[in-house]
Image 1 (cartoon, rainbow, N blue to C red):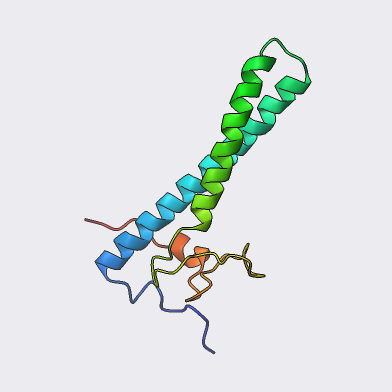
Image 2: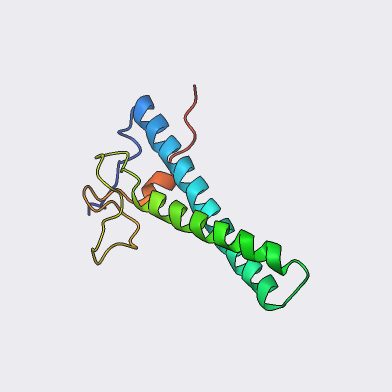
Length: 119
């Protein structure tokens, strides 16, 4: 029985491991920053709606957090696949929220399982 993606890690040379690992680290950084800015946006608007003394500052920060969250989300959506070079996520496809490249089928699970390459 053949499993899709089996042998993926075995066939990678050092350069590919480095490229995939760096791509994965960048992806995680952007994903975490998107969540943090999204949470900051929600928190700011809670402060505004609660009419706290920090409401005016929170309103100004909420706008910046919102635009930062949108920019980061677009940046994640436009990341190129480290294997094939095409956009990792497709625009307007039914698999937009999927966890695999729309072109070559490389999955985030495969990318996350690559250990940090040794020098």
